[in-house]
Image 1 (spheres, rainbow, N blue to C red):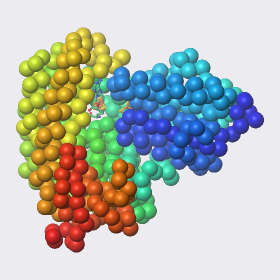
Image 2: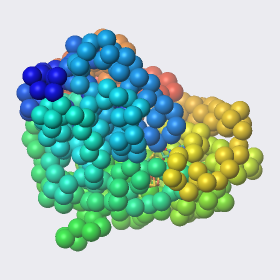
Image 3: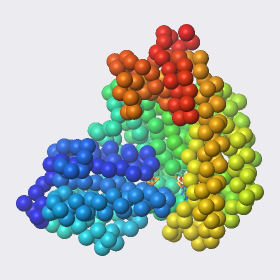
Image 4: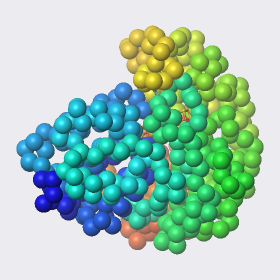
Length: 449
Ligand code: SAH
Ligand code: SF4
Ligand code: F3S
């Protein structure tokens, strides 16, 4: 026994937030498993619980706190066990103050310190004291996790942090400045995944288009895609997120020409009003955004474009909102995420008056979601009768009798039967469509019916 806690044997990891947190949680889990802990699916039996948190909007942070509140109650019932660690972007933002808010908390670690979770656990056990480490990611830290949520598709970080300063966004403050991973390391990780039978990798960065800045080797994002396409053996490559200001014809060319790069682009527009985009410091206008979408669609017919929208930004008038609504109507995104503006402490927008009333934000959000629902359904219905290449991921969560997978355009398809096809690319004839997914059946070769 050290510091009141025996060495934990069973860990449970809870993840909130974006794909980067999912990737960090996989790495955390991998490191804990290598230290001999079993990873289990519920907190009840766990003697170490890690909560990986998000603070992008107020609601995300509130979720983290209520989760922590529940765990602290459970901990006071169970004695010194379980050890509780808070990781992620709330941990980075609040740091040591969290110990005051949650006196039973054992470890606080920033996203940058995920590779060190094993050492932090040791320190907690040796000293019997709470440990707080909210530093940046050490150069050359391990990245590839031996534990992955899926055996078919994986996330691979190509960069950390963000150097953009969108006026509303807390990410640069919690993830630090932009640092690209050396291309050799990325290639090694993707190749290893291909060798292990993975069919798809999503390359992650807050703005993948600025990949390469600060590296010894001169390489940009399209150059990285080309190298991975030629040398990794990975069947499908995706990436997120692409910032419209840096989205250019070289990247369009890579999507058009490289066989493994899928025809799907997440291109968050945020707003359709020039004035609001300027206030957000996005560095493009609605005209430039439309031009880039057209360029992409001309070069890559059938490409699926998705986006993010913020409604109720400070000063957003009815006219500004209509411009966003029109842009969404015209662009015909395959899907979108829409959010109500949420002021985040320390950001430029938090100093502005949050002047769009809550009920109006709700109305605008609903209007965008209603509009998009119709568009998504129409796009999906238009696919009925077509044969699409689907990467089969496994049984559907909602109906275990069905298999689920995604098209190259990143659309979900559910198909009856054929358990053995998990991890395979198969032609599927689309024979039904909903708002969020397609239905299909396995057929012979792509192009055949
Ligand atoms: N790096 C990505 C976005 C990361 S955050 C990019 O630049 O596109 C994911 C999404 O959360 C953003 O696209 C934005 O739509 C939303 N978001 C970020 N901060 C927000 C805030 N303060 N209020 C509401 N939505 C926000
Ligand atoms: Fe936030 Fe803008 Fe960076 Fe995206 S690009 S993470 S929205 S600051
Ligand atoms: Fe949230 Fe941090 Fe991602 S704030 S959206 S988990 S970078």
